[in-house]
Image 1 (cartoon, rainbow, N blue to C red):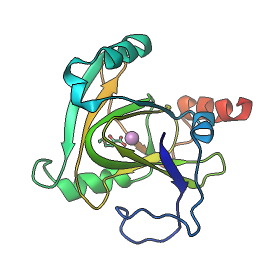
Image 2 (image 1 turned 90 degrees about the horizontal axis):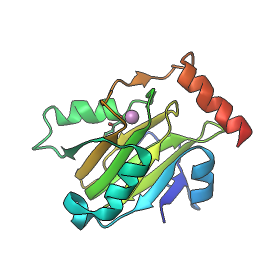
Image 3 (image 1 turned 180 degrees about the horizontal axis):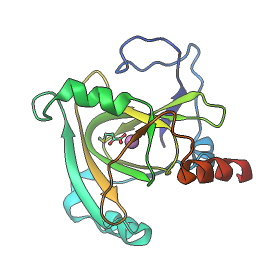
Image 4 (image 1 turned 45 degrees about the horizontal axis):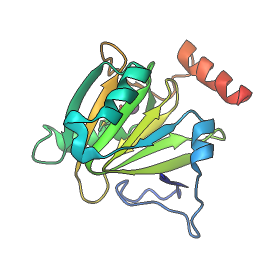
Length: 178
Ligand code: KMT
Ligand code: NI
């Protein structure tokens, strides 16, 4: 299952784990309550995987592409990482399937604390529209990820504060009822 924890408040390099001492784990159940879902797949098969195909069919993930986040292949690497790490939301779900390497997604808990989710090869994660989040690689500076989307992709990110969007309000309402 997913490895997730509440982050410390240190402003050291975001690529470090930022675990509290002692660690404060966050369970898959807690993540589901804030709308974060996870599948574990065999990433070696990603180009021809019936399990992945089934998820894509069921969830309507019609679009996909592959992004490699690493200094020598991603133009303006440091700049892009800074963008990814700025707290933001989207008006659609963010769906990422880690094909290789490591990545962290940080999401806000219902009490507005940062939860860090450690992803590695084979982890497929979905973040709901309207959740504040951010992304970084770890110290290995490498991840290869499939980006999935329902229909034509919209990458537009709204940095916090972005509370006036209907999607944001809908997301907050979904927390109340959970
Ligand atoms: C986002 O919007 O947070 C991202 O696209 C993160 C980078 S995807 C490997
Ligand atoms: Ni995002």
